[in-house]
Length: 161
Image (tube, rainbow, N blue to C red):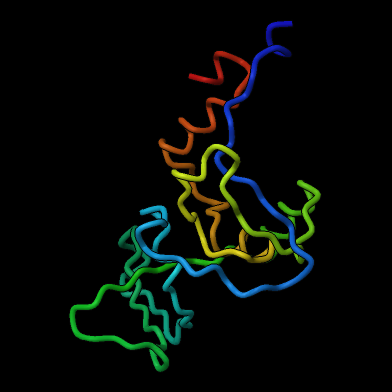
């Protein structure tokens, strides 16, 4: 059939599974994906206080959030990026549905023929759990740019649009 003969586009990445933990790859900002560069320098910090500032009758939400920055270096006018972590229940349910081993370690490498254009998407090596918990937005809608990339893998022409 036409669908069986239809060739999927090349993937630019290959996942290499490892026997155990290894030190993270040394990465420069020049060879990272612009939208994920914060993952390479992020430091964990906990929320020490969260308080709703608006009256429930207002029909909206404005939160006052305090972050424990005890171990962080911060100067006036520095920027702060919030990189949320997915709930373990969501991560575990997805891994179970896809038959992924959450404790497996892997690293991303450029696929053959794509070495010159390789950019790091997130810090590796890491576990499948770390990847799904920290580097994947599992609950938000996909970005339009991501949908365009995924459309190339759709077999049905209607789905490709």
